[in-house]
Amino acid sequence: MDPSSSGIQEPFDLIRLSLSERVYVKLRGDRELTGILHAYDGHMNLILSDVEETIMIVETDHMPQGTPSMNVAKRKMDMLFVRGDGVILVSPPSRA
Image 1 (cartoon, rainbow, N blue to C red):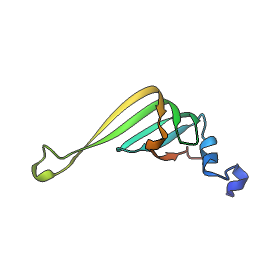
Image 2: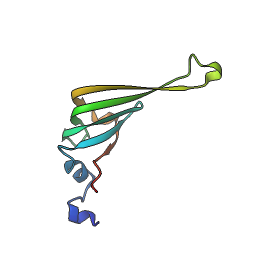
Image 3: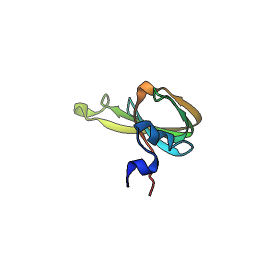
Image 4: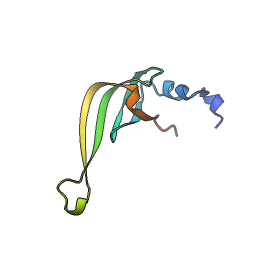
């Protein structure tokens, strides 16, 4: 598929086409979000609704010989403002 035929010519075009759709956002600090994208700006600040946050927690303190254990914490939020300097990746919904 030719990107120009779908209206995608710059990276932000892909974000623009994902407005009002569920997106995946990877953040610094082993955090991931999925939510409906309502707004964004050039700094990649995002406003999301119906958000589920997943936090990966690696602990090595209580394990013998420093063997790490991985815990996953999840929480839901109705609305969230995401500051752009923490955003690593924004993935639009798959368009099959």
